[in-house]
Amino acid sequence: MLIAGFPAGAWGTNCYLVAPAAGEECVIIDPGHQATQGVEETLAKHRLKPVAVILTHGHIDHVASVVPVCGAHDVPAWIHPSDRYMMSDPEKALGRSIGQPLMGELTVGEPDDVRELTDGAALRLAGMDFSVAHAPGHTKGSVTFRMPENPDVPPVFFSGDLLFAGSIGRTDLPGGDHAEMLESLARVCLPLDDSTVVLSGHGAQTTIGRERAANPYLRDVAANGLGAGDPAAPRRGM
Image 1 (cartoon, one colour):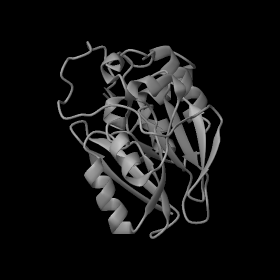
Image 2: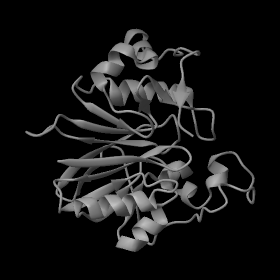
Image 3: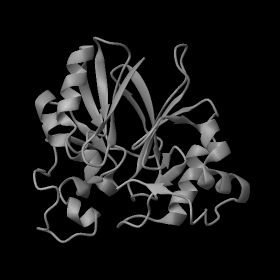
Image 4: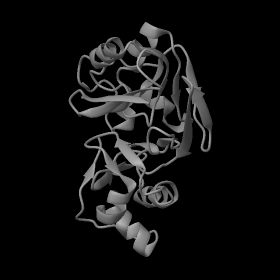
């Protein structure tokens, strides 16, 4: 399997292109702010043909390039219905007033073909399987994507802004909820095998085993159930 990722834009949001191999169809995950050039360069480098864009949530740093990417390749975008409004109204998602400047060059809106993700959905895209888990906390419509283990690679978990190396997503923006975040960590992350590779929305690659041992939030949830978490521990995401 081929997974090519790069950090894009002012927020350093990780965009991933996933394919069975070079020269085949691919799926694009979270083409955010200023990701268009990186997407096109990665497609050309690996000779890939996109068939879909899938989104972990609706914040502008994860969806800002959806319209140009989907439009250039005539592919659908998949997003949870609770976050769909953010593509057209990013200021509301950030608690800003309409008309307030937001990275002035951004053009917001929906691509022509938008499809909705649901908890437990099994997507078959580009010959690959993606399991969808609704994971609210960072936003109401946050989801994760999990790919099963195969002979070439261990299980892969695209966590969006739910889980990071050493941290979790912030919960202080509209739609964020710390209790929901802890519940999502317990329900979605803790059951995963320690060998599962975590590719998050920001920052470095990690594994579930590493986070189970060292992430203060995941350790607290595992040890004490849905507690408050460590208020001094870092959080990330826009």
